[in-house]
Length: 115
Length: 110
Image (tube, rainbow over all chains, first blue to last red):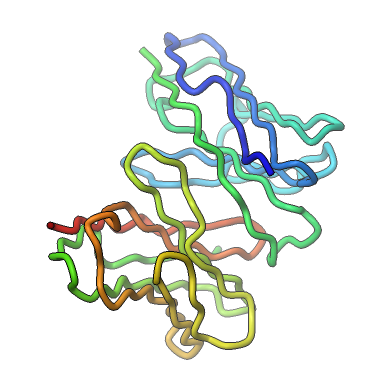
C-alpha cells in the first residue's frame, strides 16, 4: 500500500498570506489528523477529521482550519500567516474506527516557512 | 489533559551500548502507548505500540518497550545500539488524540 502523501513538501510564504496544505491518506483509512512540529513546542495536535467531519480539535487559533473530502483526502488551511507558523506540518492517517486503539501512520510533512 | 514526559533530551552512546529511554505519562485511565522514530530527513515511523496484554512489547529493529502501569511508564530499550539508530525518538499516548513527549535525540557514535 502506498503511504501517506503530503503536498507540497516545501512552501515559502510571507506574513499575512494564507496557505493550503494537502494530505492523501493510506487507501482505506478514514481518519486524518494534522500536527504541527516545531523545535520549541514539539509535536502538537491540530485537528482530526473522520468521514468528512471534524472529530477532535487541539488548542490552535481559528486561523487554522481543515476539511476532509468524501475520498478521505484532507486539506489544512492557515489564514493570515504569522512568523510563528513556520513549522513542519504533519498529516497522519488511521482506520478511524476507534479513537484510542488506532495506529496513526505519518506522511513526510510540509515544511512551511513564513517570511 | 494527558501529558507525556521524556526525561532525556539528548543521549549519546557508542555502538554496542545498551539503550533505555524513559517515558512517563499522566493519564490514569486506559491508554494506548506508542514509540515513534524520526530518522534524519525522514518521516515519523512507528517503532512499537502497546494496547493491552503482555506489557513487554517488541517492535522493529530490535527495540522493545515495557509498560509498567503502577509507574505510568513506557520505557524503550535496545540491548545493543547501532550507528544507524541515530534518530529522534518520540513517546506518545493516545486517548482521543496522540499526545507526544518532547522527544529524545539519540546519537550513536561509530
